[in-house]
Length: 159
Image 1 (cartoon, rainbow, N blue to C red):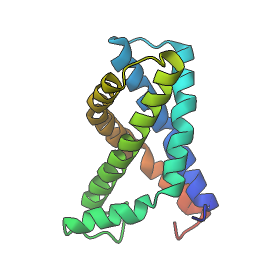
Image 2 (cartoon, helix red, strand yellow):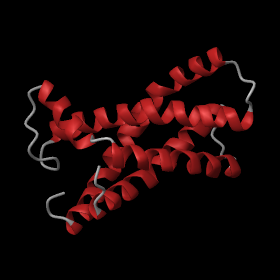
Image 3 (cartoon, helix red, strand yellow):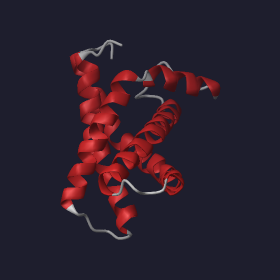
Image 4 (cartoon, rainbow, N blue to C red):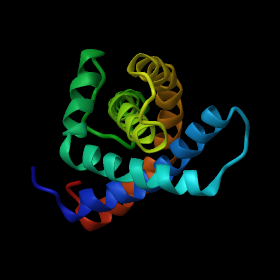
């Protein structure tokens, strides 16, 4: 798949804040409180950001978003001026990100911090976090995708 400059800029501008928010959310959930341990935050951001960039650059999320919104009969020729398309496409992208990013990040964390962690407990813990991560990723993406889209659109008007 061909990575354009506009796609790279869009993914950078979207994934940096979204990964920060998701990493904070994961810390709050794992710490069972609203405090952040900086080394863990930076380690988890360093894990999640490359995974998120890979997902955003390799998986055809725009095509999948159009396919998903088409299932609901939503017009999908414009993103910024069609709230129904934007909400559904962003939800579906958040679902894809969360279903890939959460298990991979969680697995890498388990391998770093506790490699003897039982696989069954890993799977259960991971499944418990996905709904929260979908919701948080959805809201964070809604907040940051339009500025990222506008920056990418300035580079390539066809983006």
